[in-house]
Length: 148
Image 1 (spheres, one colour):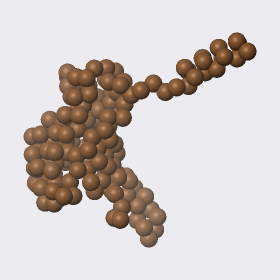
Image 2: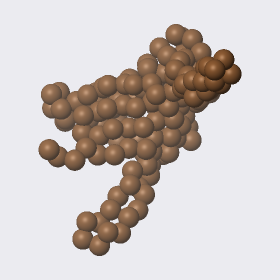
Image 3: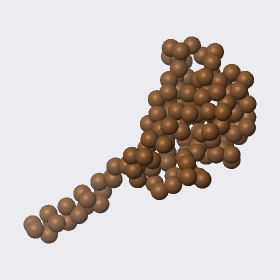
């Protein structure tokens, strides 16, 4: 019986997932700030704020599909295209009631972080990297929200 309890305790400890915790509160704050510079920069059309959140080699991707043929593709854009789109107005035309800037840090491990941004009409899944002493968005996979 004693062996059974010991084995059970070991299994519980091994199988219990560790919480997704930042290396420091400073990391969490910097990651959240980077995500907000990205989405709030977009909403306000502030290209400089958007650019400050991005790694120069950023790739943002979305899956596309033709409903009539089922043909699928991946559309991507780099940092410069995203910054240009923001400079042209970004999301300024989106009604304020339709905008969201909900940031959830999913995981942080050393110099990598995974973040979810719910922007209202779409959701961005981001990978951030600590680069040059700051957190920067390196990858984004996004999905449009289907109309209700």
